[in-house]
Length: 191
Image (spheres, rainbow, N blue to C red):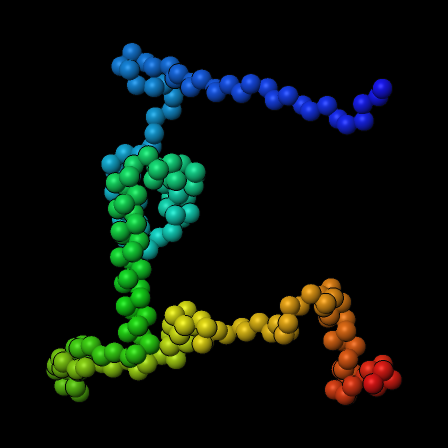
């Protein structure tokens, strides 16, 4: 008799790979390229982060890859913690500045005047910056996207399963005559 069902495949016994032992030099350190991560580089990276630089630009300046930078963060938990704190501080500073710009603010400044005789006088004044509408819009769009979203998606009611999304643009284009902005003859004939 011929067997009609396939023969089940037996799984091979899985063996865990043995950890690779790295060769060591005479001092016991693993051999390989030495890391570029030094206290000097760490200090420079942290200064750049405090200035608001992004990781990609920092990597380019320090001449390392993004993968290496991620490895530094993974292997040095204190370095990662400091990076996160510095990025949060830089972000807070920007948020405060954006808020001030959106609400308007004032600050003291010294104005220097020179009269016709050449006498120079300095006067303390208060300079006022009015609220900036662009900053207000930006703030609201990001803080309350449900109320202030700029690009609203127009989705049809229902589940949308019966709509041919590939041809919807062609149907919409055929529904209106571009030259006269009136319904086209094809729709008039249908309706």
